[in-house]
Amino acid sequence: MWRLFALLLPVIRLYLAGLKVLLYQLLHSAFTLPVLPSKSGRVAIVTGGARGMGYETSRHLASLGMHVVIAGNEEDEGLVAVKKIQEQTGQRKVEFMYLDLASLKSVRQFVLRFKARGLPLHVLVNNAGVMLVPERKTEDGFELHFGLNYLGHFLLTNLLLDTLRSSGRSGQCSRIVTISSATHYGGRLNLDDLQGRSCYSSHGAYAQSKLALVLFTYHLQDRLCAQGDPVTANAVDPGMVDTDLYENLCSPAQLAKRPVAKLLFRTPAEGASTAIYAAAASELEGVGGLYLYNGRKTESSVTSYDEQLQGRLWKQSCALVGLQKA
Ligand SMILES: NC(=O)c1ccc[n+]([C@@H]2O[C@H](COP(=O)([O-])OP(=O)(O)OC[C@H]3O[C@@H](n4cnc5c(N)ncnc54)[C@H](O)[C@@H]3O)[C@@H](O)[C@H]2O)c1
Image (cartoon, rainbow, N blue to C red; front, top):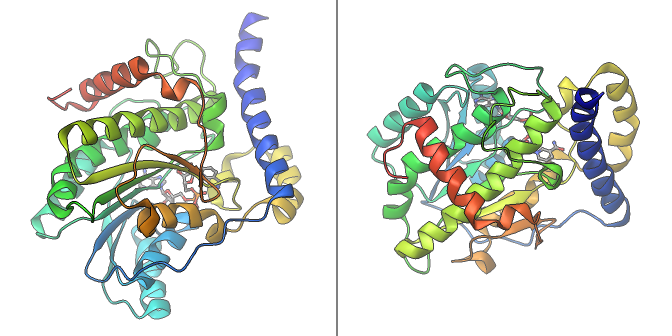
């Protein structure tokens, strides 16, 4: 009985968070991006930039003149996306680089290849993600949602920090934009069981990974501030958006989702607008540590502001990915 309850609770929490977002989307129109300044000569990496919101983010940043690196694990899809963006925006400096966030080795290799190019880095969009995948492990043995959505981005960001730092300056900070989700409000972070071994729930695992990304963003911003680095870190909640992310919903939920998505979900372009805003808006110059939803600063969950938890998660994450400095 207790086990059934423990399994159902994360499902209920996730669907409640979803319902709240749908209600909001029913009553409010999508955030409209203001005209953004040219970003010619600047470089961005967008993880999972080949489809969904990542594609829209890559396309928009390229249209602002940025050199965009789409970092993803599906090469064919990535190359098609590059071609489409080049044709639509006229920006030739759009490229695909292989990155599998479910492999720490791949993350390290990606960073080495990127750094070997000698390019600066002004914007890192931690966008890639998976949701509700049946229990699976990453190459390194981590629960997939935690390992890919969170730990992969944790390592990627940390390894790219020196380049972000040296590419930014006062008045023109480099920016880290990390895509979280409203599901983080229902997320629970169990530092003694981050891999969900005691009672696995894909719903709980997804929500936990998205909560971990908010905790990470706030702690990262504090560290950047303390060191006086010209880099900012913000978290973005895109709302509910009609993308392939929902492909792992069970069949009845898929059937129910289709008409609801048509009516109430945002399009990928609408969903990406807050991430693009965080990456490029002049109003956000030098501003970090925010949770942005529908183009505005919003309160994230009470747990996400727990500084002790942020610090403990950071330390544990360093140990898990093999980073020396905690
Ligand atoms: N769609 C929504 O309603 C919604 C709501 C809240 C948050 N989000 C978040 O938005 C982000 C983008 O999702 P989306 O909705 O555009 O979905 P999507 O499925 O269209 O895009 C996900 C991207 O992640 C990439 N990816 C998956 N596994 C990867 C791996 N191992 N290595 C590298 N890249 C990998 C995919 O190739 C794809 O490009 C995700 O982080 C998701 O959690 C989405």
